[in-house]
Image (cartoon, rainbow, N blue to C red; front, side, top):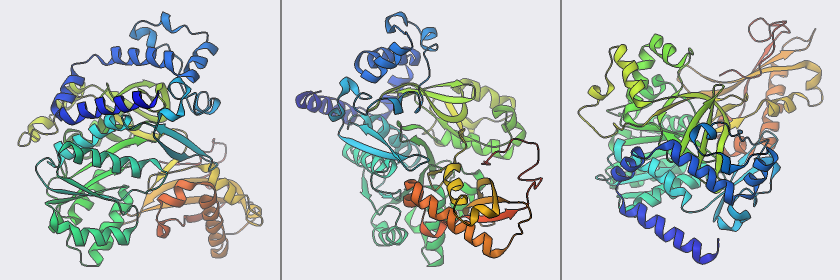
Length: 501
């Protein structure tokens, strides 16, 4: 893509976004056959992306022979291992031109080695529509002056800059939104809210759920009267309970949990894949109070994040319990296995299922018709590759293993551990690591502190997301020492799992 073509693409797509109301965009997408659009994207990517051309050739696949959705579903899955890590960054972009993108974000893997994710300005317009749904449908930000406070980590990591850009795009479209970017600096967040919040009809805090709760709790201890700012929350990176939503809502004196907060399902790989809506929140709160219905619907005894998605923007499939998506981006992806476990439910199937349980969410929300849109649902349990998410950072067992392999400490432990994120009585999250002691080694406070410090040191060294996303006061893991063969965490004869959700 040369300079002039890139300029014209930006002008055309941005003008179209600015001039097209949200209602029109979503209606057009609802009326478009999603599988046909996914097939068209496949052919376009197969023709223009060198890495995908090579990938298909290695599989002896002729794109011309794939002409319907049944063919599309036979295409091999993409993963980081079989695709992204085997090709140069340029070859993963259209026409092998990395310079066709204008921004690169970073996510870090288990060894701390960064993965780069290039994108162009127009890629953000699809994602800005997800933010527009929340700001328009949930927060009525088209009619209320709004201060958007970006509390995500800023820098090369994807979410902070992406969120900032999308909010500014909405402001350009005409929404009375003003953006400020304190990042995850708690003191600065509290300062800007107290000094600027009263100039606006509402304040939206955008950040990781446990961090936002920490900001809110700290503010309460300092006498911040959150209710005067009409606080709204946009969250990403964590699964949280409806009890958590209610608790935080009470502390900011929020009036309507279905309209005062919304979670995003986002990844560095492709931006925002789906978003909570007032409808999805209403449904999830019903399911939280009716666990038997939830178990019947999701076939698990844990409550996933429940969102709606636009299949024209991100086309979902399910394969062996894992979510696949196809979507356009700086690195376009076809049938990409993101390693998140979950599933899909059509709008009609969801409404029918709830009717069988005597619940009509549309009727419950009838006083406010915004946020009731007939898009399909995606539910997400989280990563299926044994990571845990903590303040939006993916924490990998491999990071903890290195901490246990340090001199002296390795003499005390077997190497087995259980990593999980837990909540205390006040619903503050902490990183828990239960470590199995070696035979004849007795637990002591000295050992526990030394092990926790070693794990922390390696987490900060190996995992840049952990070091930058997690506030310092929440970084130290809470280590518990268990004897070898402990029946709860390390039962003998059972394949060990290093993480618990």
